[in-house]
Length: 153
Image (tube, rainbow, N blue to C red; front, side, top):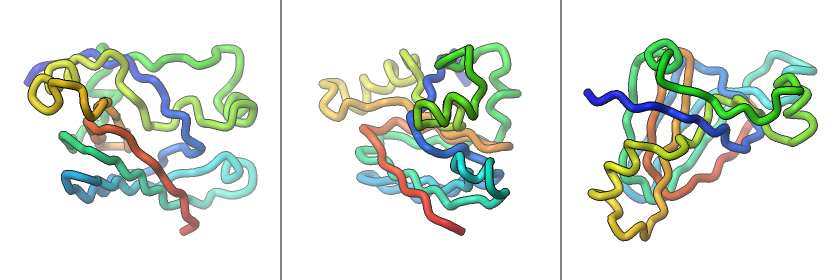
């Protein structure tokens, strides 16, 4: 298996993934990933979790890996630091998104460059390489975009 370097850019989402289970429902046109997570208010008021559904469109590939991403990629990843002067919660409160949510776009993805030749050589779908990280597993998705919704448990 080829090893890739990961430069991770946090997605601008208002949740923090806090889950062991990552549930994927796949189809070519739309793929849903269900996780549990917290919104900023949960850290202030309670310990409750929310159901988060991330729906990807124009999906070219989905890989589910049962390993801890950060342990198995200890030396070959870096997370783009949004603002070193603020802690996670102060940043989240100020800018409206979690700076390290467990949901990232892989910047300058070597995998995407390689796979685009197969899936989208004319770049019609504008595919991106996304990474969703749980505690003991992670998902890599090549897709054109996504939307998400958060619901109470």
